[in-house]
Length: 211
Image 1 (cartoon, rainbow, N blue to C red):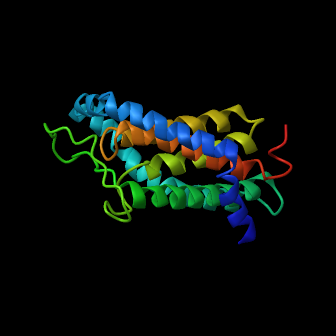
Image 2 (image 1 turned 45 degrees about the vertical axis):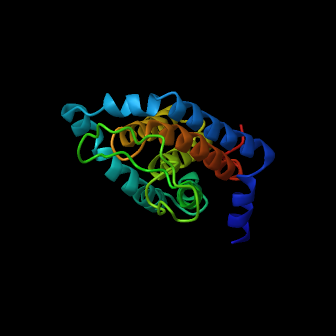
């Protein structure tokens, strides 16, 4: 438990706070510039959605199944076992931190069941639980996906296939949910915050996180 709390604190070191402030700044720019709304209007196609909608389920299942698979195929003390625990920790931290932000930001989600002609992309409901803890800023799917991907990217730094597959899957999940259940800026913020979390978790894993 102490190590878990230490990881949370590490996510808020001065350097990592700077990265999270960048996520806030980029969100502001994407919202006020109208890019979020433009992205929403131009990703409504049925064909596109048929390719991207499965990512929501993938983003929910992968952080649960992947640690189990890594644990089963690995032996005590192996990289797979260490990665299993690291991935699980990164996923939990990603969910907790993104949910904490959602509790306070209350970002109104896009209308994903039917196309909306009313621009609601700039609507936030700041305050405790005014917008719930499920929808909103940042995307938890993206945060968790990138936390897991960056964890694997660092631990398996000698395995190009694992590294880049992990990043591509995270990118697929993040881009996909930005076309239906989240705004594009929530994907961007989730990718940055998730990368911070993954870096914190993986760099504490020895010896596999070392160059």
